[in-house]
Image 1 (cartoon, rainbow, N blue to C red):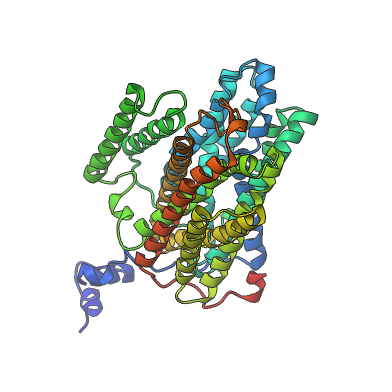
Image 2 (cartoon, rainbow, N blue to C red):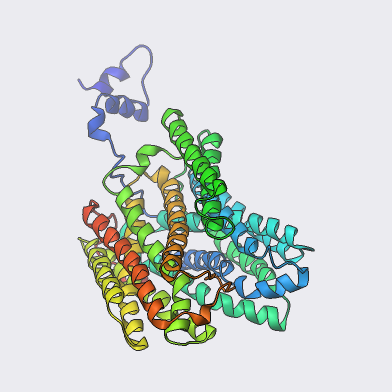
Length: 526
């Protein structure tokens, strides 16, 4: 007589089938049913191909908002400074957004796992729109800076939530090619943002760079919300560890301020900077101690371990840091060595940004078809490291430099889809948002650190007091081309080291099988 038959004759009353199954499973050793490392993927959402495309378009539009707003403001800053008669505070219009968006990325990812994607995407876009409106009507610089911070709170939540929603709609094997689409959106935003910002500031009014966000955000919500009800639900309600979140955000904000002020407002070894570094480290240690002792921590530390997550996070962060570090510093190199104008130097950055999207697309399609999907990232990052090494030790004409940078970007771009999908594929479904938010958080920190480090390396090598953000404080025109070439060898060397680290991490990362169809249907691949 089996257990179900014995229970049906029990005088205390029969158990329901789910209760009986649960009791049967309770007798199985936990090692047999532990799925924390390789979770089963939930059944595909009952979405038609048209609905998937609608969701994708709304998510791309949402992502475009965040990408556009990080670049569209820069070219309008002089006009804003003249109107408010305050040039000294202009850098905070950019910094306030970056500080807020970096700090809240893990918060939105975790809250999406607790309260659901729908609530968090509405919250993020609402904060973004409210901040945009306040920026557009700001009467003075302090209000504009505070409004930019509010806008950054919403913008910082967009990226992790969008990536999490995609993970709910499509399987990991199919997901890589969508990450390539998102990379393309960032390229379009990065190239089109400064152009739009200049046109609005010169021919219309600088407030248009913020008003344009309102119809775009409302359009994205109108497309997305009707379909959200059909997306599978994976979030789990639990108590929110607000203290852990505040400690993590405070540590990140202080660290970002160190990178913003160090070597600029204060000397790197000044008491203020050293005290801030100590405060950031103390807050980070307090967060770790709290996470180890909390019943349900804001960011579970075991989530950051294993054979996939830490390697994928480091690889993606190194690639992002190398790309942004070069993007910020290369315009000065173009101007001094090749005598390009500012606009021509901006155009010369297009290969670095655009070709990385091609690399991401290649990696995404490879993931959809190949069993050993990480090989494309290993080859790509190794190729990028070799190109960086060649750039560091070879003087090239402009066409040769752009060709090598294109190959560098092609290899670098393969890292992004592989790292994102590998992380999401290796955690339980109820923690995908948390892992995605943490990934974006550490990428942003690494990017900020790399930009500051590359700039410091260049300034030390040149021995000149200059600003690479557009306002030259020192004699830039007096720098010899040969000195700039020599100084940039160290910058290219640093980029090479980052890509070599990314390649090593990809080699060490476990290649877990991706759930999903062996190949992408023809209509989805188009």
